[in-house]
Amino acid sequence: MQKAIFIKKMNRLYENDIAELKDGVNQLWRPLIFLQREILKIRH
Image 1: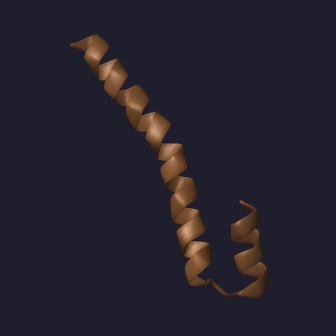
Image 2: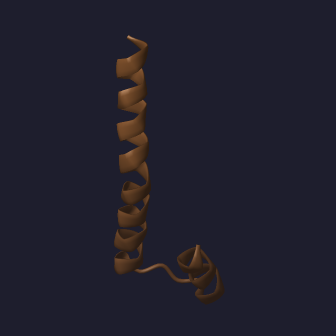
């Protein structure tokens, strides 16, 4: 969230900012995808 606020204030987006955001998103999605797989295993 801090990155988004910083980018909005500065009105600039740099390659390393994009890389950091992608990494953060991936860190959030990994456990969610794992949980989804486990739930699907239980249901079937």
